[in-house]
Amino acid sequence: MSGLTREDFELRENGETQQISNFTAGEFPLSIALALDRSFSMSGTRLSLAKSAAHAFLAELRPADQAMILAVGSQVEVVAPLSTDRGAEGAAVDRLDPFGTTGLHDAIIRAIDEVQPAKGRRALVLLSDGNDRYSQASAADALDRARRADVMIFPVAVGPTRPPLFAELATLTGGRSYHARDGAALADTLRGIARDLRQQYLLGYTPTRLPIAGSNEWRSISVAVRRPGAQVRARDGYLVK
Image (tube, rainbow, N blue to C red):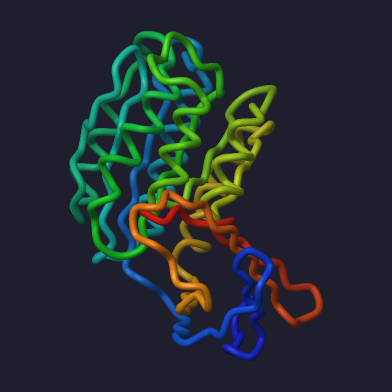
């Protein structure tokens, strides 16, 4: 929903209301990791549709937005580094062919680590059938890495099922998970994610109970909007480092 003001938001940390000291609305610079599952379980139509959807997503980005392409298989490869070069990114997508098994948990961690140092709003968009095979990391490891980072995750399940991990990653990071049962609608799903990423609200506050550095304390965050019909997607907390 556009047109919201600072007064429309209510922010709580560990259940305690916080004063919003900084408020910005508008389009923010983006740094995106776009990860495509190219394992044998995605062979044929699934991979073809995923590649078409990736092109649709890249076309929605603004010239200054940065993107990188990761190929997810038996190994996780950065096939196009973070840049604004849409031609190079599109060519990297076109070169993807089926190979290997799905190291999904490893791919999530690798993608977060690759995009975390970037500037602007950071996000991971993941297209996969969701069937992890032979990752060294567990699902818990992937969730823990997501909790410690500042990267919104938008997992898109391509196939008959959506694994519970996808919803957990989205909720934890302020992203959203999708289930593309109809592969023909996959490109529209990716275009919608790009538009959502462009239009964001940034809220800043100083906690009333100041954090202690190094405590590794988890602090929950809840954000509500005082507008009928409005829904909020935001991180559900942060780790005090």
